[in-house]
Each structure stands twice: as structure tokens, then as C-alpha cells.
Image (cartoon, rainbow, N blue to C red; front, side, top):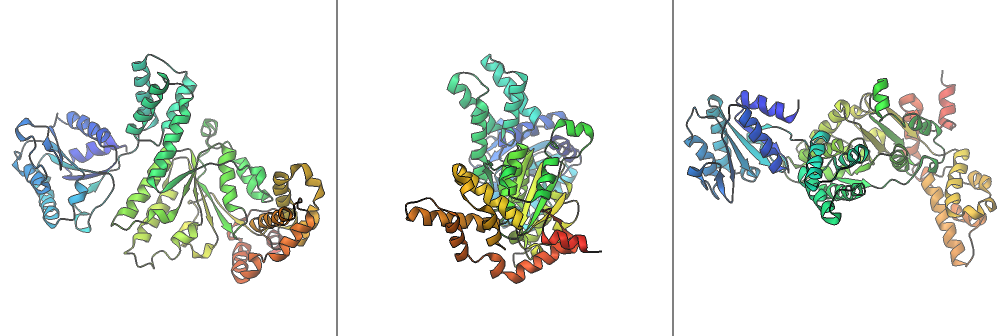
Length: 503
């Protein structure tokens, strides 16, 4: 059910108090007025703290700087007269005891009257004593059809046109922005060269990055890493390559559903984050990085509001990759935290979205301590697959050395004994191998020469890998994977051999 259908239903059902969280005040008011007109041409009154009521010359300015008087105005209207009353930024006054009591009184009074009060706010901030009387309705960002209409209107006003492919690319690039931002960036493009051009897609993408930065929840992450930059993990790479075309229209016609997501579990420094970046690059999709810690705010209701905002932005940018790094740190021990249940509510909203989402948002979550996650997170239906990324085998260490040295010394690659390096660094993760190369480069640079195989081995001898300092933790993780609870990312590993021997 879209916004207009839901709002129409609430008007007909005489829901007295409706709360709409949105930054798009102008757009949502236009939608409300249109629906009010369709519902028997109902008059619409708007109130804000500075100017009071507008919409009726007889009451212009009534309730100015007096939010309680704004509610009293509703009682002045004839009981049988239909009306829709819009109160802007009214969330700021809901903690006042008089306002809260008045709203609860109005909720009872308006059940028998054809009136609806709409509270507009940029975020959800509802006190506990008003949760039963306020009905929250989500107002989505503009859809592709709405954006296309606006772009075509601008094209018509400037007297120029774009080819179908360029127009579609421009519309796609605008998804995830508010209508106000879309108008602003397109006006900027027109002011720059007098018309809309194919190159303006880059302008829109920069505006999108700015918008996502301002949410302070998601980061628009540049993805330049390729699948070939991952050493080893052949099972995982095969799985990803097989799904490379799953977001195309051809896949929809074939009957394939959108891929849901992937959980990467394993030891730190084994390439989980690198894989998330490589997926976005290989599938040619934007990469959004979520720091789950940013979802939690200090105000009541703020955390839930941020979670919904994150979901709304991610779905508006779809198809895209949503990368959640170290998800185990955010949701470890959910339900036992002394935060009045905030973490549990955020977790519940998030996993329900994972299970029910139909939008092409591919979620890549990484975790180091899988046992810290609630079991609901691992249930089938949240993710398409859970992969265990263990320590690289000797062959995989050779591949990792080859990837790094091909990048660092492509002209001198054959001078390094990669077989010996892989043999001499057992239990080293990919990140630790990279650190040995950095340390070897410091050795060579300090002596005014290029670094050699012996420098890498000397550097490796000075590094104590995590596999030796956190033996018990890693052993537990490997036993968890060996029990068949996750698919192995590597084709040839001690764990895969162990699983094949298991009857």
C-alpha cells in the first residue's frame, strides 16, 4: 500500500491523529491537499509556530507562538464540518504535559467528527504516553516515475530534450534524493550550461554523496577493488560471479528473485571487508557502508527513527550494496543491555526488514564473533548464504603475496620467492601478510635499496599473528564452522578436508 492509498484509508476511517515523519514538507502537504480534495473537497488548514494558522482568512495567524492554542482552534470548528489540519514541527511540543493531555482529549473527540490532525516532523519523536493515539505513516522518497515527470517538466521549460537512455540514467541517479534536492541540483545543472546534459549525472551523484553524508548514518563508499584482488576464497568468488547478473531485467523475466544478502564470518584480517568492496565493483552497484553504532541516538525514539531512515535511503538507492562491517559488535547481547530496550527494538526492526524486504538491496554483513550474534540473525531467509572465511592455506597465501607484489613491484615480481614466503608464514592472515610487505618496504627504504624476499621474511619473523595470540577464540570459531553451520569460502582448507571426512 503506497502513501496515498494509506492516507486515504485513514481519512475515511476517521483516524484522528496522524504523524508523518518527513523532511519533504512541501511535497507531503501537496499530497495531503490533493487527497483532501478527492475526499469531498475538505478544507486544509496549516499551522506553524511562527505564522500560526493559514488557509482561512478569518483565522489567519491564530495560534501564533502558542501550540496549545493551535489545538484549541480545532474545537472551535463546527463538529460536522470536515477538515484536515496540518501542524508543522509539532514534535517539539509533545513532551509538554498540557499538549499531551490536549491531544489525548482530541483523539476521543475527533472519533465522531470528520476531522484529521496531521503532525509533520523531520523525525519520529513520540513520548510513550502518546504512542496509542498517534498513527505513524511513512512518506517515501520520490519514486522513479515521479522523478521522471519532474525531469521532463524541467526539460520542457528549458526547451531541450534527452535521449531515452540518458533520461533513464539521470532518473536512476536521482533516486534516493528528496524532490527539493533533485530540483536544486537540476537547477544548478541548468544554470551551469543552460540545459540538462548527459554529464549532469555526475553532478547528481555528488549531490547524492552529500545527502548520504548528512544523514550521518550511511557512507557512500568508493569501490575500486576487484574480485581478482582477493587471494583465494574460491568458493565465495564462484558464488558471487554466478550471481553477477541477478539484478538485471533479464533475471526478473527468468523468474529469479533479487539476491538478499551475504553474511561473512571469520577471523579478523582474512578479507571480509575487501570482499564487500569487490562485490560492489564487480556487480557495478553503489556501495553504502553502515556503521551500526550511528543508529543509536540519545533521544527517545531517535534510534528507531534513524533505523527507518537508513532503510528508506538504502531502498531509494536500490539496486545497491549495503555493507555492515562487524555487525557482531553492534548487536552482541541484545536484550541484556540497560538501554530501555532500544537495542532490541532497533535489532527487531532491522531483522524484520532483512526477512521481508523486496527491494534489490544486497546486504553484506561481516562478523568476527558469530557466537555473539542473536540466533534470529542467522535464520534462513535473512541472508542467502553464510560463508566462513578462515585463515588462508599455503596456496592461498601464495595468491595473496602474488596480488600484493603484482601491485607493488609489477616489474620485479619474478625476483621474489613467493613459494618460500607462503611456506614460511603459516597462520598469517591476509592483513598480516600485507603488513609484512609494508614492514619489508620500510627496511629496504631505510637502506636506500629495494626490498627483497629476505626482508619480507625478517619482517614476518617480527610479527606475531592473531592465530597465536587468540588461539582459543579462533579455535572456537573454526569448530563452529566445522560443525557445518556455514559454507566454507575456500575450496581447499583444513576445515574443508575435515568436513569431507565427517560421515
